[in-house]
Every structure is written in C-alpha cells, then in structure tokens.
Length: 276
Image (cartoon, rainbow, N blue to C red; front, side, top):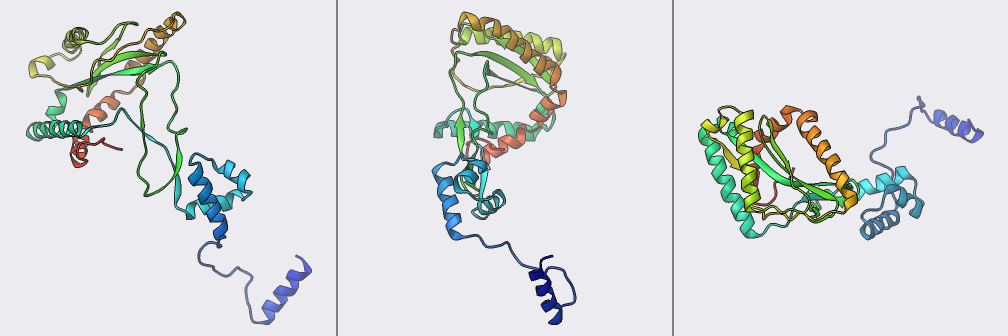
C-alpha cells in the first residue's frame, strides 16, 4: 500500500471508522453525455457496426462501451426471413382459411391433426445465403422487427418438393434440371403422394386426408451449367438423408401440433405473418 493510502486510512480510523469494506453505492458510474452522443451517432450511421469496430474508432474501453450501449437501450437484432410481401387480399384469404381450419379443429379435436398432409416446394442452394447473424443490426427493444425477403432466383440451386404429416416425411421429389412446375407435373406429384400415403400410412386414405398447401404459382427451374450437374446429385442425397434419417420423428409431430396456435396467431395478426 502506498504512503498516501496509509495516511488516508489513518485519518478514516481516527474519525471513527471501524471497518475496511467499501461503502455501498447505488447505480453505475456516470458516463459522459458526450460519449453517449458519439456512440449513438455511430450506431445510427452504421447499424451493423460491431463493438470491436466501435472500440477502435472511438477509443473507448470495451466494458464502458457495453455499458453505454446498454444505457442507450440498444441490442443486436437480426432481420426476420419472410417469403414475400403480403397484400391486403392475401391477408384476408389467410384469415378465412385459418378460421375454417380452426373450426374443424374445434369440432374434431386432436384427431383432426391426424388427417393433415402438408407440403411445399423449396429451393436447396449450392451456396449459403447471408445468415441471420450476418444481418444483425443495433436496434432498440421497442424498434419494429425488420424483415428480409428470401431470394427467389439463383442458378446454383435445385427445387425439392416435400410432403409430410405429423408422423414424418411421406414424399420427396426433385425437379429435373430445365423443367418447370405446371398443372400436369403437380398432378403427377399428387398421384405419387397418394401411393406414398397408401404404402406408408395404411388406412389413412380410407379415413380421409386433408391436404394443406399454399396457392403459389408454379416455380420455374433455371438451367444450370454443366459443372453444377454433379452437385445436384450430392445435394439430393444430403437432403434425403437429413429428412429421413437425421431429423427425429418428433420434429414433424411437434410441427403439426403447433398448427392450431399458429393459425390463431394468424387471425390475431389480421393475416400478417405469424412471427415467433
């Protein structure tokens, strides 16, 4: 201990102090308003700036910087992926469909979920698009959630059609390169789906199947370069193994079980996207 501190403690004890513990203090040390204004200005100018970049630019210690950002009410948020913008007519249709399905669920209970078969087309990319982590920005807790729309066209991808029920996958189909999804091809897919249900879910066709799918227009598959042809087979194999072997059966059951709650959220949000 330095002589200065020794003299300080001697004075303290001479004045009646009986312990060496620090006295309680309320709140955090105050931070200069000027520093807060600098941080606020930088974050508003570039909302994707990292704490390290702020530290280097403003020469503020990281602990102090974290405290300033917290005091300003900022937190790092990523954009939410949504397929496309919804029109008012889209929202109206979603409300009507959700209300109709919920009425059936109210009448039949959990047995209703056993009859649902759902499916959709999805692009399987040969590259990794920007992740949610990469899209994170500094925002206040009360800021509106930002949306990020999915890419609809890319040469390095292959389209897969997947149908499933609460027990698992029923059918997986890949569109041949250079072909398009139209009414004829979709009817062929439904014929294959019927056979798959008959083979994998005996008795389900007799009880009745409710097919739940969207009304999206047929997707157009783009021609790929010769070099990418060999990648398609690798992508197909990986998707097949993941959906049929690596994904636990409870995953599909949980997804179907959540359907009534999500439909109710769709109604509560006036047909807008059901956010997590």
